[in-house]
Image (cartoon, rainbow, N blue to C red):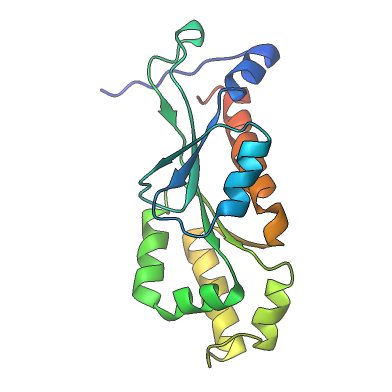
Length: 180
């Protein structure tokens, strides 16, 4: 019988645990110097390793003082697309895209597109592919509903900030709820 233990941490304990948070970066992630630079300039710990889903996730390292007997890997992933063109190419390769979403079904999953006006480009058809804008939007929204994830569009210059804070607050909420 599997037993899951829940801990109730105090606010200062949660802050201490979060100060040890490690952002996981998929080793296959390409052209992400702007994100790594953000982490390094702010002394955010990160580790490069192969991830099953997405390009970014997070973990809390072992901490005997707070009853964490081994590294804790959290069920969260952020998939990054560097442009609407990359997003459209991914959706066009439906089997591969859907397989990624199937792998992500049981975790908190975010699709990050690094174009602040990406949604506008998507609905206007302002991308390289000949994919019909209405059909593309329909496919994306159907995938979001079917696999329960959100797509976020924003400027590349704030991606590192978004990734870190999304992971940080997700884990903080889990700790506050006693779900380590």
